[in-house]
Amino acid sequence: MWRIDPGNPTAIGAWMQLLETEIDGFGHRIYPGPGEAAAKSLWQIGSGNPTVIEALVQKLLTLNTRRSKDADTFCNIADGLRQIGTDSPIVIACLVQMLATSKDSWTYRHVSGLLGKIDPGNSDAIAILEQRLESSKDKLTRAELAGSLVNIDPDNSSAIATLVELLETAKDKFVLLQSNL
Image (tube, rainbow, N blue to C red; front, side, top):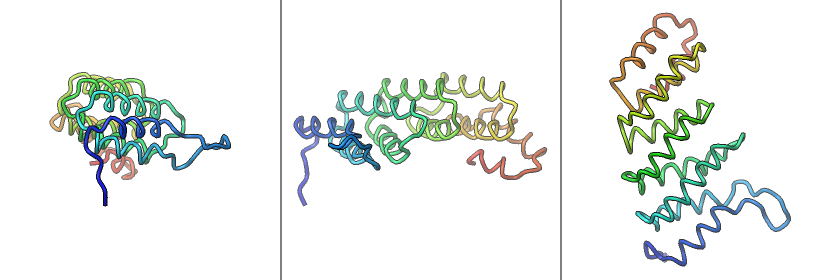
């Protein structure tokens, strides 16, 4: 089996083009898109490369704005950013931005889990999730937000109080399962 040298600019360029390929030669959307394989290859050979990190961040932001996410590609890119972008302020800012702008619990859970691994205790992310938790009235959403908050800040008193309250008052145990704890 052959291996590509990490940092190879030709390979990185080719994988970056493929990352953006979603339409075949006939104008049809490719699913699953080659972006999933490209993302994995990029984070394997482009560790520490700011251009690769920026391309993966932009693709993640693009996927986040779509109504229908390509979940496999999203998770592959997120996993890659966890591995190559741990100390990257660009990656952390991207994830915090996603928490601030996203409206779906799927993103909350995945992004908060990732932030909990690469930047636990991120004060901006905590503030965003606490504000949303405070303003939400829906029990399911509150459970998901509390679970997301605990991913980043395991000792967060707001999240713990919310989960205890839901545990004491929930008639539907499914709500608690959504906290992902």
